[in-house]
Length: 302
Image 1 (cartoon, rainbow, N blue to C red):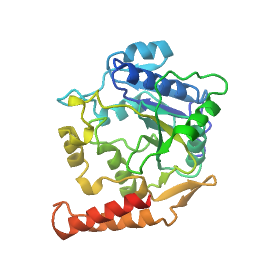
Image 2: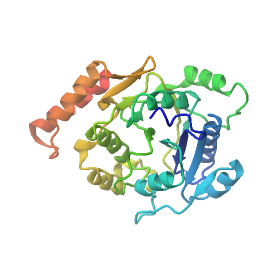
Image 3: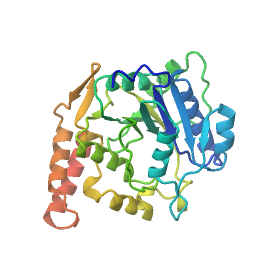
Image 4: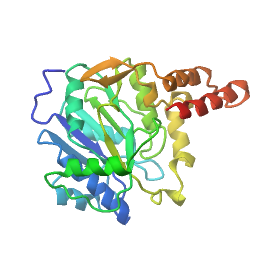
């Protein structure tokens, strides 16, 4: 896709934020959105949904707001509708879904460009760094270096099970099941689907630092984590079952020294392959016992 990477708008970042009514969620989502606006003139941002406060934030920052998203019976926006709206309202050759609590630095665009020059179809994923941020960030001239100081002093690398962004050409992911956003399972399916289609699924963790601002789960029913919600169970079913719940360790390629390369051997990757091989949907018996032991070993090796 090298003939496309020089277009005026190269990358469209889109997201479906939580309501801005919680004071801390309001701060971290505003921080995230402003960091995206500082990535360069060839990046546009789309805000999708009609959660409380979203229209006002879009107007304040001069961003396109797409409120008419389809929802499930619980009122949760559907991933299929979010992705469709982004595709319909962007002409950029490359799209990126990013969770609304994720801070990005300009390397995000640099890595996306380099990979887009090397592959026609691809999916870029990667691990995040977790930070406790309680205040609005000043996006002054040296905002990136100031943020890196916070990362190096306070940040911690998240496990490879979390996926908070996906970068891909606009020609892929045009048919997505009706997953509930913000619930577990759909992000794992994205990696599974990329591998199923034999696109390079590129783990960019080594070259690309993304920053997650920690928060509680008071925005979810009962304040409980999404793993225990019925919507998460439905997401897993829509994705073909727990056996299709992939993670960054399952990526086929990695981005290193400016090139897409097959993933190198790592003990955690090897154990993860064994884990997938012996997994039993019944979640009982010898195979399930072995799966659990391999899972514990894999977590120690990461």
